[in-house]
Image 1 (cartoon, rainbow, N blue to C red):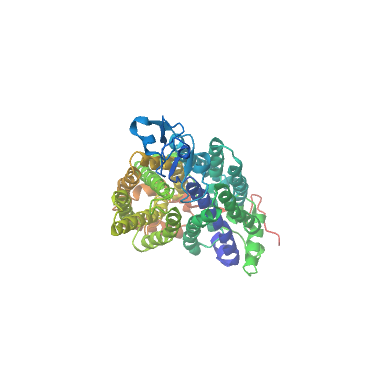
Image 2 (image 1 turned 90 degrees about the vertical axis):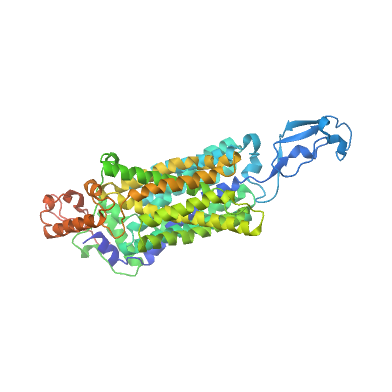
Length: 560
């Protein structure tokens, strides 16, 4: 019996799968809290020199001063005497301490560690180091294929708990850099959670759950404003986020190991117990000894180098990797910009999170109804133009302010939608034999290049409009290359590199006809598939129940 049929017979998507889904989706909530709360804790409020309270120093407003004027004739004169501050009496001094306007969180990391003026590069470094840890965590998360999905989730859960508490006790900003790198390591684990959800759920429910999984990310994004408002001090905010690490307790008690992974590793008895347990949770009587065998369609794997060996595959790979890294740069750059939509940091964060819900739904619907290529290109171009326009729209009049907010909303929403659509579109262009390699390559390259997102935002100290022009311009330029890719809507996925080489723009219908004909031949001649070009790629692996071993004996699950 096929693995997919067993998933359907034990409930498809019942109480067991729902509990697993809710437990694992909470890991994405914790991941976005780690990212966005750090951005909020690094928000720079208007400041001034603390010396302005001393005699002889010129009074200042909260205009982000790095220097202060001091009278050379202060003496015993009153600081309110205007003649004290005449041009001939003043000398400029660098500020040694700062006081900040209470316009947001009472005590951010910037306020606590005085990260302004000569130290204003530190917020950028902290954010970049976190992204670097996140990218390294991508590499670590791939160990799930070796040691198991559940195991890697629990290991990362322990790392997450420790690294959530660690920054609270770091006394200097230099120690914070190390703590934030370690914090980033556990963040990408939610991808393993999504993979586990897919491997425990029947195929017809996966598209829905894949989209709903990311909706929890949006909810966590919006929650950041409330957590920051309630905490008011960055250490308290950090500890509040620790409560969301409790999702790993649910993972420990409610989430089983992937039976698919267990079967592929030859651990058939454990897989059988997982099936029976989930069936029991779903109120279904299911015994492993009812079936002769489980057929696992093992995904064939090739070498990553093959992505660059063939000319068309190489061009596809370069396009997909380039577009995905640009989306990643722009998305995370705008995400950590706490005033991109509106100057109120609380509202900006809450709206940005809520805005992603219709963005993911839009990506889902246009991909299913219209196609992948054209909507992705159209959404990206409109998003790029809107993002570029935002810093150039004045705010003096109310209607202009409304236009600016609308452009920011449109830009962020469509960028998120295009990013989500490209996730699917890019994966569909890779052949089955290299799909995991291609998706992994795109994610890792995008992850490591995201390190410079905070650096691009730092360019606003040179010119306020520079980050928007870079993010918007790169989005428009990169997505034009997508026009070269074939449309994948209603198309079978290529199985081998040879398939992918023939699957090009303008030849989609002919390619589909040839592919379907080959599929019919596989069915008609299944007893001798060796004569077919892709037979080795499509051969199922029997890793299972009731399969004959080399000695001719059958292995059976015992009753559990």
